[in-house]
Image (cartoon, rainbow, N blue to C red; front, side):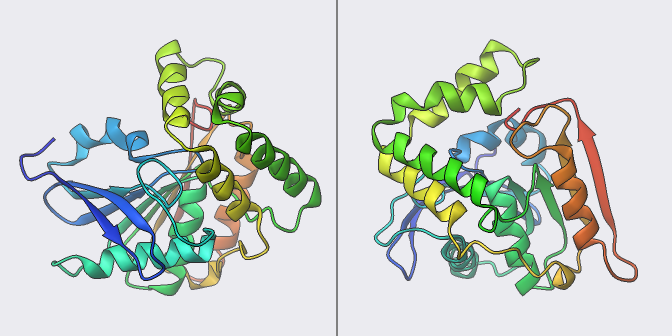
Length: 251
C-alpha cells in the first residue's frame, strides 16, 4: 500500500457514518463490495493497482465499520456514493468497480453520470424485487440473520464460495461475514429485496463496461451477467465485454 493511504469516516446527508479507505495515486477508482462484504473484499487488488490509481473503497451503511440512522436502500447507497465523491477535495469522475450489490450501485450511478469513464462489474445481476420466490428466500435470510450472524455465516460461505476455492478463501469470507452486526446484515438484505431496488436505466450507461462472471457462481450465474451485458449493450457504438473466470460468487 502506498504511503499516502488514509482512512476516515464520511457523514452523509441521511446521517449514515461511512468508513472510507483511500490509497495510491492516479485516476480515481472506487470499489464497492457486495452483500455481506466490506472494504477487505478488495484488499488483494490494492498492491497490484495502487501504483496506477487512487483507490477508494468504503463499507456500505450496515456493513463493516459503517452505520446508518435510517433503513438503508439501494437509492440511498447511490446517494451515499455521490456524497463521498462530491466531498473529496479533488473533483473527478471515477472508474467504478462493483461486486454483486455494489455493481447495482455502480450501474445506477453511471446511468446518472454520463462522465463516468468505465465500469467493471463483478457478478452483476438484475433487481430481484419483482421475483416473489427470490424475495421470499431473501426475507428468510434476513430473519435468520437477525437471530445472530453466527447462524448464517457458514451458509453464506457454502453458497458464495466456489467448491474449488481454498480453505484460506473460505476462512476470509467467513471472517468478513462475522464482522457484521446482525441488524446491519439483515437491513442490507432488506434493501436488496425492496421494491425501491429497481433496475438502472441501462440505456443511459454510455461508458465502456467490463463484466466478470464466475463459472461456479451459484448466486448470480453467468446467465445473469449475459443478460446485463445485453441490456447495457443496446445502442450504437457501445463497448461491453464479458469475461468468464473460474470462480464462485466471492473468490
